[in-house]
Amino acid sequence: MLKPKLYLGLAGVLVAIAGVAIYAVGATTVQEIQGTSTEPRADVVTIDTVKLFEDLERPAVIFLHDLHTKTLEKKNKDCKTCHLEVKEPSSLAERKALSPKFKRLKDTNKQQVVDNYHTECITCHKEIADTGEKAGPIELCGKCHLGQIKVLSSRQPMQMDRSLHFRHIEATKDKVKNEDKCDRCHHEYDEINKKLYYAKEKEGSCGYCHKGETEKNRMSIRLASHLACVDCHRRELTKDPTLAQQKKIGPVQCAGCHDIKNQEKIEKIKDVPRIKRKQPDVVLLQADKKALAEEKKNELVLMDPVPFDHKAHEENNATCRVCHHESLDSCSEKCHTLDGLKDGDFIKLSQAMHQSKSDKSCLGCHDKRQQEKECVGCHASIEKSPKPKTPLCTTCHMKSMEDEKAIAGVKPEVIAEKLLKARTFMKDTFKAEDIPEEVVIKGLVDEYEAVKFPHRKIVQTLVKNTKDSKLANYFHREKGTICQGCHHDSPASKKPPRCSSCHGKPFDENNLFRPGLKGAYHQQCLGCHKEMNMEKPKPTDCKEACHKEKKK
Image (cartoon, rainbow, N blue to C red):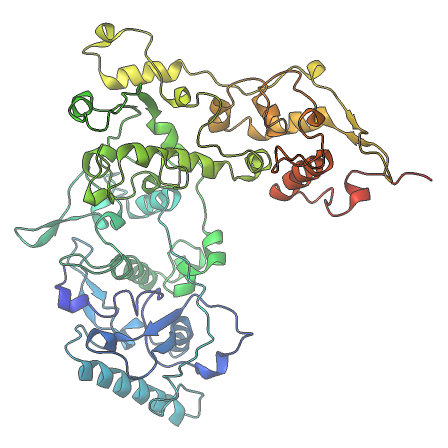
C-alpha cells in the first residue's frame, strides 16, 4: 500500500473524473470550448491541488482530460508522457502502475506543485506551438485560471455490477488450471506486517474499504480504481490493440466509463452465474430473544421471524451492495443493533428494515420497485399510509406451524426454507367471465358522449405485466388485489363498489382531499397514463383519449 503522502492530493481531484489521468497538451484550448452551447463532458477535471497547503489565490484550472489524451495519441505518445510509474497498491502482483499525479509521485509543498504544472505544461504547449500547430495556453495565469467556467461535467459514477464482475472473472481466469484469479483485484491489509494479502472466500466490494476520501492506509475509491482498473486496461491494450476494437478490453479514457451513453452500451450478461462466496440460500431473520429480554426500557415486542430468500434477492439485484452497503456481514452484526451503533449511523435494526424512504431498507427497496413502469400506474395513486388498514406485517413475519418446543434445536435455515415453501403466490385474478368486458361511464355526459371503458382488457393487461414479478405475485395476496389499483379504498372483491359511491360531490366539506367524480376519473385515468408513459391514447387530447364529441 502506498504511504499516505504518496497518494494524497490529487486523489479525488485529478482522478475524480479521469479515466487515465494524463495532463499534457490539448489541440483545443479550454477557452475555445466554453459557452452555454457546449455539451457537458465526462472528462472535466478540476486542478486545485494547492488547497492541500493553503487557500487558492486564483480560480482552479478546468482540465479536459480526453481532449489531451486524443492529442497524445495522434503524436504516438502514451500515458507515460505525463505520469510516472509506481508499484501498484491494489494488486499482489509485483508490477508497475502509473501514478495519477502529473509528473510527480508526492505533493511535498505548494511551490513544488505550482512549478511542476507551470514548467511542464507550458513547455509542452510551446513545443507544439513552435511546430505551427494549435496548442494550449503558454501565458501564465489568466489563460488557465479562468474563473467562471461554463464547461459542465456529465460524469456518472461507474458501478461494478454482477454482469461486469462475471466478465472480469472470465477475462482473468487461469484457462489451464480452470481457476478464478480473484487475487488480481481482491485483497486485505495486514496491519502488523504492513502489506497486502489475499484472503480467500473473504472477498468483498472495493468500496467496503476504499471510501470517498483517502484515510490512513486506505486510498480513496477513485484513486484505487484508477490505479488498478484503468492501468490493467492500459496494459492489456498495449499487448494487443486489436482487442479494443473487438470491445474485449475496458476503456482507458474518462468517457469510456463515466459517460452515461457509453455505460448503456456495456454488454449485459443475462444469466450470470452466482458469485461463489459460501453465502446462504435462505436466512431466518429473527430478533435476539436474550437481547430483547434485557431491553426492558423500550418494551419491545418480539415479532415472528422473517424467512428471507437470499438467493432470489441476489438474482434480482445488480450487486450485493444493494443490501450489504458497508460489508457482507449480517445487518445486525456490526452496524444495526437493537439500540443502534455509531458504525451504523445509530440506525436501529427495525429502522434499517422498515424505513420506507430509504432504498437501503427492505420496505424502501420494495417501494422503489413499485416505481417501475409495470407497477407505477397503480402504485402512484395508492396512498402510503403509516398505519395500513390491513395487517401487512404478517406478509413477511411468519409464524411457524409448530410450537416452540417442536422446533427447538432445529437449524434456522431449515425453518426458513419450510416457511418459504409455505408462502402462497397470486399470479392471476378472477375468471374472465367475472370481469365486465366493458364499463360505460355515463354519469357525466354533457358535451361528450359516454365513455366506453375497456375494463377486462385493462385488468388482464395489468396481470400480464406483473405475472413474471415474484415480488408482485407474493404481495398481491388475493385475486382482487390487482383491482385495488383503481378501486383503491375498498376491500379486494369480485364486485367492488362504483367510483361514485365515494366520489359523489365535486366538493365535500367533510373530505377536502377527496375529489369529485369528474376529478377522480381524470386524476386516476390520466395519472396512470402519465406514470406509465403511455403514448396512446394521448391524455391531453380528450377526443382521442376517451371522449367522442356529442352530436348536437
